Amino acid sequence: MLTEWYQNIEYAHSWVLGALLLLPVLIYEYARRYKKQQASMLVTTTHFVKSSRGLSTSLRHLPFVLRCFAVICLVIALAGPREKFTETKTQGEGIDIMLCFDISGSMTEKDFMPDRLEASKQVAAAFVSNRPGDEIGIVIFSNLSYTLCPLTTDHNAVLNQIKTIESGYLQDEGTAIGSGIATSVDRLRNSKTKSKIIILLTDGVDFGGTIPPDVALQMAKYYGIKIYTIGVGSEKEVDEVVQSPIGPVVQHKTLDFNEPLLKKLADETGGQYFHATDNTALQKIYDSINQMEKSRIQVTSYDRYTDKFQPLVIAALIYLILEVLLRYTVFKKFP
Image 1 (spheres, rainbow, N blue to C red):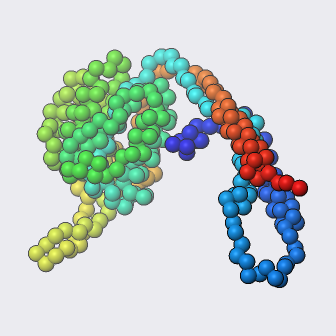
Image 2 (tube, rainbow, N blue to C red; image 1 turned 120 degrees about the vertical axis):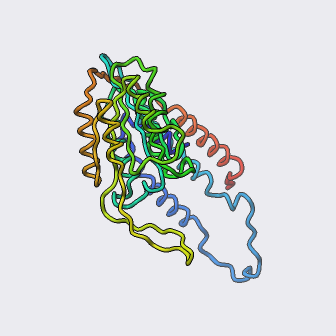
Image 3 (cartoon, rainbow, N blue to C red; image 1 turned 90 degrees about the horizontal axis):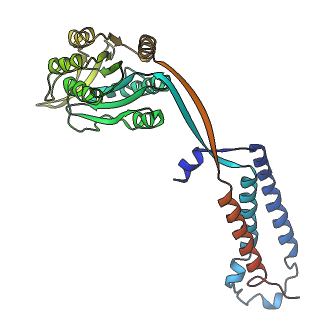
């Protein structure tokens, strides 16, 4: 929680934080003075007496520690910590986009770096960042389909959800392309925008699921939704471990695409089919879609700040008060 808070904080006068470099000097000076104050004369006749350490002795450095905490809080407060909120005002008409991810087990193959799914996530995140003003959502599917993020203009929420996508999220294995499209169509059908598109990203042949791709295709055509299909995977052979009567064995296989299906989904809805064979090709595909689907919008951003120094000032005062109370009560020195 503290980490998330700190990530949203910036400083109005960040140069003030350089004063924290003086803290080691204060600690060194304190240690030097303390060492100088220690008795240097040894009494040989009392070496057999066990030393007793009371609470005040054990915590004798506590006032100085509290003072250090107070200094740290004051320096950070003087740096002007503040939380930044960016408000955007859009004019014109954007596009509603559903990103439809295949998360079946084969998306973990290593012919992309670091694997197919992670490469797809990275490129999709860059695509989202380049679509200001568009409403974007996410659907994931294997044997089942699920809306991970409904349509929203909050792209930070979309990017955070993209980071959470993992193979096996839906547990049941399969590649239910029809179900993935149908769920995406259901999220887009009530949209009031003129342009609605689905970007379907898959690496396999349709199997499993309860809705055939042809039925999902008709649904998309009925609601005027374009489908851009991306076949992810190289044509290289990959190793697959399978069970046999003699135990696990490794088989060589070549990724099989149902290209006619993916082309049909794209052609009949006014979209386009792409075959991505590596990370670079995948990036170029998203760039192409970005160029073809233009948003007629103007985005104006406003930055709003909320000061966050007050809790630090309060904490510093508490540390100073505790130091004074302890120094003149528990740790008070008598002549």
